[in-house]
Amino acid sequence: HQHRGNEPLEPDEEWLQDQTRCVIARLDYPGSTGYGRAYRTAAFGNSGVAEARSLIAATTWLTGNIADPTRVVWNGSSYGAVPALIAAGIAARQGQPDIVSAIALRSPLCDPRKKWDRVSANLQDVGLNG
Image (tube, rainbow, N blue to C red; front, side, top):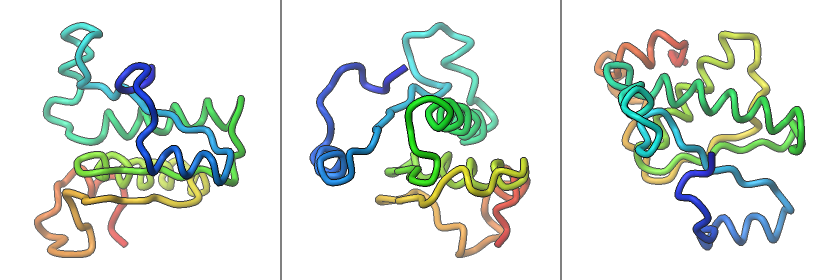
């Protein structure tokens, strides 16, 4: 599913696509509306992890079908930075550390380098401990 339906690309996404001929996928993460209660509540109590698993699954499908696996970049804005970081930890633990070439964070709601003792146990559990 494409997040936000058929809306046009954001200006930075359009520039990136023009410059690199990349594939841009926007995900409807668990917790999104329009797919029923179970889907909307899937992320409750496990913030970021369900979304991260969706990101890994989408990346795996894209790189197996239409995208160059050596040129994958995850872009997380605001809360979207959290699942991107968790996904990197999960992928590394699953033996897929190269699933993504880079992660771009814009206005992240987290900084895993600071105050690690206060970071969610979910982040620590998936291996984002430096």
